[in-house]
Image (cartoon, rainbow, N blue to C red; front, side, top):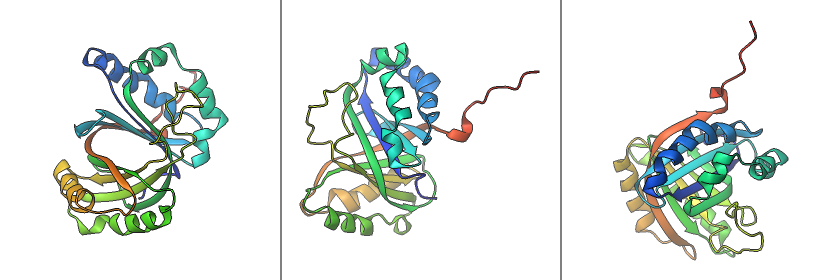
Length: 228
């Protein structure tokens, strides 16, 4: 199936090697479950870079885009655990995109993920979206499972710790997501459709390939055991 829901939160960051064990433990033992449990959140996927930067990437799908600005999500942001405060303070080169899923073709998830970051001209978004609609066809390349476009909301896509008045030229960037069965298939497609192609007035900011660490769906969450 296409990507679940209509909204997506993309976060990506580097972390010092000395802090990586605790960082990964936090993600795996607390943070993903905490976020997926929020009303409106459907699933989360964690990745590590095969080729790309920042090193770590996480995708959270939500039932609606509005779930990413809901009272429940705002409450979670405003009340982080002590472990979250310590870990988030260590993030480096943070990317945070609060986005709408505007195109999603194909079905299923892959073990590898390609990600292409685009910076559109505000005057040419319809033309760019039309161009990408033609490129996001997973059926013509072996090993490609599904392809998606997410478009960041500039007002919401800022680091959590940033000042509300801070401007970020990348806050309105778009991201192409490419699910594939292996990194080789992703690399071939990115080189063919994105590294050598023009995108009108849009700029390709970066491209990377990531491998799946693990995923968590709402249905996977632990439920309280019934009393004996």
